[in-house]
Amino acid sequence: MKTEVTKLFGIEKPIIQGGMAWAATSKLAAAVSNAGGLGIIGAANAPADVIREEIKTAKSLTDKPFGVNIMLLSPFADEVVEVVCEEKIAMVTTGAGNPAKYMKQFKDAGIKVVPVVASVALAKMMQKGGADAVVAEGCESGGHIGHATTMTLLPQIVDAVDIPVIAAGGIADGRGMAAAFMLGAQAVQMGTRFCASTECICHDNYKQRIIKAKDIDSTVTGESTGHPIRSLRNEMTREYLELEKSGASFDELEKIAAGSLRNAVIDGDVKRGTVMAGQIAGMIKDVKSCKQIIDDIMAQATKLLKL
Image 1 (cartoon, helix red, strand yellow):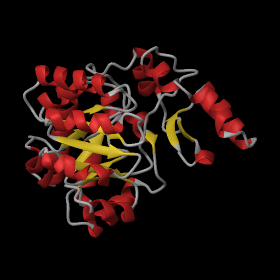
Image 2: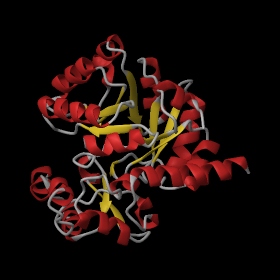
Image 3: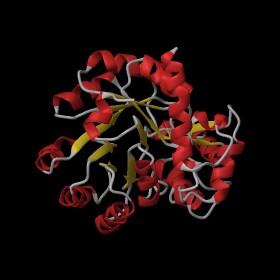
Image 4: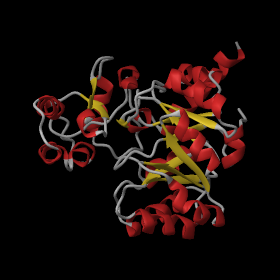
């Protein structure tokens, strides 16, 4: 299945792995790339030397293209940008800010730039600034989200820009991929589905929480702070939402949220940790290899798109 995105990145299949903080390691990125998709290392708030080691590890595990997701609000963003440019990786996805100040650095290093956007206005701004593609991410996604759904956001962004659009949010199988393509996407990005893969370092408790999730099990915290986050309901989200309703300050909310994602992903605390996952978690019923996930999705999507 050749699309503008497969040509842009030199990959076989139009499936991109989300750059999830803590979960998107070099091992996961390499596994996705080896399976024909495009793996992404999630830089999150990690220092530059950690990201350099992750890139080197990924290079030792795959000779296929892979990328790095850079959270622009990270205190180490400047240094991480320098590292990815020195290592000359295939592409970067960016979030939590505008990559304009780094665009020349990326271009000079031959790196493709793909910002994650949640609105038409931002997509237009990114195209004007030199982005090679954009990820249109709907509010069904896990983690930091906007307010528009994938089904409404995606076609509007496709109509508004001339660069390739990658769909994200609420996609975990070939049906979702086929639907995204019908709405104009040139590829899909998935996070939650790859969290429940054998190569992902997420604690087994985290993976099992996704597998056991029902359709109504996700919730959104952080609306009062202006930084909404989707995760699966647990003791921590209930306490957080109660504090938000009572008008708690940002510092009070931060006390129970700080470090909670790591606690869930690494330590397996799915009661007090933040189990970031999209609304699609209710569809995921097993842990499979990245290759099996990608092969299954491609087979189903190809069959549907032929119809």
